[in-house]
Amino acid sequence: MEQMNYETAIRRLEEIVAELERGGLSLDDSVKLFEEGAALASFCSNALKNAELKIKKLSEAGEEDENA
Image (cartoon, rainbow, N blue to C red; front, top):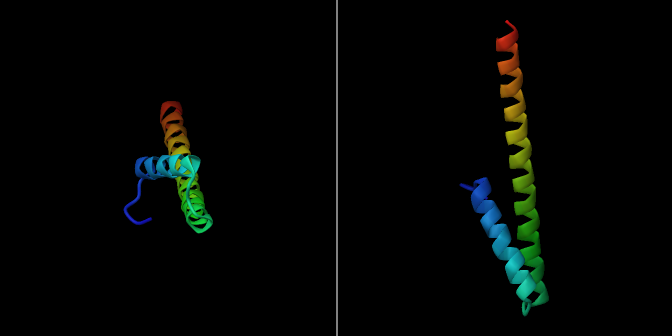
């Protein structure tokens, strides 16, 4: 997933879900898409966690500046 960002990953994940919901795929293709989707979901989850930590650190730094 090189050059992947959150927005791109979410769009691809939505495409995968739609394709799986349409059906008509072989078992092998379904499993491959599911694996790709699972990896994308993990990527997105990590991206959100990292953003949350960054925001928390920035908020804490701002609070320290106000109290100084």
